Length: 332
Ligand code: HEC
Ligand SMILES: [Cu+2]
Image (tube, rainbow, N blue to C red; front, side):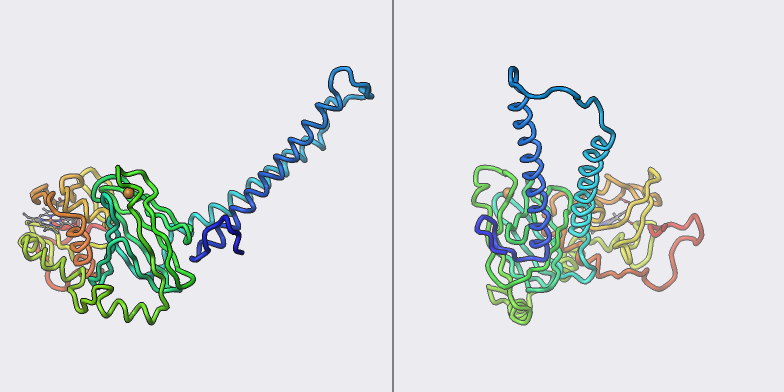
């Protein structure tokens, strides 16, 4: 459908969202007209002084009551189920989605591909491939809005948010910030370029628009930072008295000193580095230095590196003693 009032439909979400939007709008209009017309009709017909038959007024009518309760209820439930299903889908990126990292700052979008290619206010993506965005703000709240994709997600300071999509056709689409974020908010935007997959692969391998191939990947940059900041002094392949091993940390469960169990997802790992005293691993004290000066980009690179440390514990003897009193973070 190419209704001129609507932006182009260019992602997997566009058609289902528009369908829902049109049905909701149509239902609203239908009921507004129905109720409005009846109100008008009866107001005019039974106005004061009009000569109409007023005998046999109906006091109650079970059939009518049930009808006008059941029909809207059913319609409401259908709309709820339909919208909730779509909403849940937008929250569940496919596991094999291509990853892109987004940093919002006053007043630009900074985008980073895992292989190290970076872009400003432009994002190149392949058509037909699910893309997952992990997003964070370096200052205030922004919102990542691509009207032609029908996606909009707030980008917050201090916490990662996610969004995913599949671009459904090649083209150049608008990227806006949809959360007022200061004087130059209106200029905080750019473009998304959806390219045929092979073309995209070539573009990515050749180092993006700046044509800088073989740049260090995000994980390489993270590793360099990890070495420079001497994280390995306390975090080795095994748990030690100095610190828990970060091998297999990503996605694992950790118990904190207050008894809560948290999943070591991107946000947890970020917080553990930037603000280590927020949550303390139950087997340790807060001896880790705070790395408050790290930028969001540094943190994303560190995260990329920590994720490469695998999903299993490193082989070899575990320091400390085994069993319930085992020192370590891997208390699943
Ligand atoms: C002086 C020792 C020390 C250094 C240096 C250190 N850490 Fe830690 N780290 C710890 C300790 C102790 C804990 C567990 C206590 C806590 O949760 O804060 C920890 C926890 C963590 C956690 C959470 C792990 C878990 O199992 O919950 C991450 C992630 C982490 N550190 C990353 C880093 C990174 C990245 C660096 C380098 C920038 C670093 N650490 C430097 C001692 C250290
Ligand atoms: Cu903004």
